[in-house]
Every structure is written in C-alpha cells, then in structure tokens.
Image (cartoon, rainbow, N blue to C red; front, side):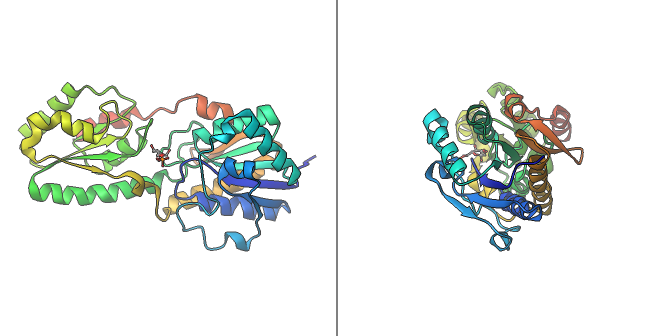
Length: 325
Ligand code: F6P
C-alpha cells in the first residue's frame, strides 16, 4: 500500500533550461494523485534552512517556457556534512514530507544517495544538467537548449571568422564532459573538436591545424570543451600563438550564456515526461532511483549507478567529425 501523502520538490546544482518545466510536471502530477506538494527553495540548503513553500496548480503557471528555476538552486557545502544532512532530515520530517523529487546533476544525486542511505529519506532523481553526463538517460534536461544556444553563437562566430580569415577557438561548457562540444562541433562544422574524454596532445592539434590551412581553408573554428586537458581555449591560444598567430587567432568563451534562456520544445517535453514519471516512481514504491528516457521509453536506474558509472560519449560521432572536417 502506498504511504506517501506529501512530497517535496527541489532543484540543485547548476541550473539548466527546462528545470521549471520539470517542477511544473512534478507539482501538477502530484496534485493529480491528491498528494500535497512543497517546493523547497535553494536545493539542499533550503532543507537545512527550513525553506518550504506549499505549491498549488497556479504556483507553477506560466513557467514551462522559462529558463532558470523558480525554486532557486545552490551547491550546499553544509549538506556535505553529516550534521547538515541530519538537520535537513529533521526539517523534512517535521514538515510532514514523506519523500522528495530532486532535479539536478551528479552532485545532486550523490547527495541524494547518501541522504537515503543515512537518513532514510526517499529521493527520486530527475536528470537536469546541460552537461548530459548522467548514465541512465539518453539526454538530460537542458542539454538540447544549451547545444542550440552554443550552436547559434558558433554560426555567428563563423560569419565574422570568415570575413577576416581568422582562426577562432570557441570554448563551450563541460568541466568533465564533452557532450556539448562534440555535438555542437559537428553541427557547427568545426575543423577540430577537443574533449576531456580524449587525450589531446598539443602537437596533434598543431598538425591538424596545419593540414586545415594547407587545404586552402582561410577561416577556421576549433571547439574546445572547458575541461579539455589543453587547459581551455585561452591556454590553447597561448600555446598556438607562435605558429598560428598569423591567422589572427581569437578566443570566444561562451560560458553561462549556455545555461540560460527558454528551453527548446524537446527539453520541455523531456522535462514534462520525467517530472510526471518521478511522481509515478514514488507511488510505485521506488525510493532511491533516477528516472530517465532511453530509446524514447521511461527507464528507472538505481541512483548510485547514475553517478558512479561514467556515461560515454559516442566515439562514432568523433570519427564522423574527423571525416567531415
Ligand atoms: O554542471 C553544469 C555546468 O554548467 C558545467 O558545464 C560548468 O563547468 C559548471 O556547471 C559551472 O558551474 P558554476 O555555475 O558553479 O560556475
């Protein structure tokens, strides 16, 4: 028999476009099943501070199209301590909350795993990060929007690069993961894509660029994931300047622009499906899992597996990028 009557929903870690659509789906699905719902502001920190607000259907009106998160987000240092987690659990229990839905990335889910194992608070994870670096789902909420934002910028950079016959190094987000770099690099026709998942030798970069310019190519675009071992686009530019300075090299770091903006249709639908599935997972008796979508079907993965198994990039895409460049 289902004993869950009241749930809490929170967003945590780096925000991603579509988190609001996921909050809306969690709240409205929960209300549909006659559950009471609290929004928890500022993620785990809000649990420690006791920052709970009851949500009704109207409270999530007009947010499906908005980037950011109405519940705010944080990376809580307090929650990383056993005392912080104890305090959070006490507040949750005294508020009458039986279970949680957490929307976030790997840090959020590491915290959730510990919270369940240590304090017995059930948490269902909804994958929300632009990095797309979570096992158990083909895509994370926000990834598609971030890619399209980066791609739009790259197309514009390409125009000016071409006008001046310049070499551009464009840095995209991804501290530990190259999903954004790989797919935007292919979609933007990059001459070279540098990822944290592959070992980048500066000599290979130089050889590839030499080949590009020998082939009469005058402007050129290199996509660099921020976590690439070269140390990012600025450092790379410094390492290349002696030989390639003549191509009037320029660096563009896209940064947090990639995290904001209205979610794409794809992200809104993904967020809506996953938010509703998270509530369903709680009603089905799950306690420490993440809901994801694999081959267009909802899949449930034990929370621990989501962050302990590294999601692989598609190496076929990397080969394709080399052939097409
Ligand atoms: O995890 C998402 C992400 O946007 C990474 O791609 C990036 O490295 C990081 O967050 C930036 O975090 P912050 O906003 O805390 O600087």
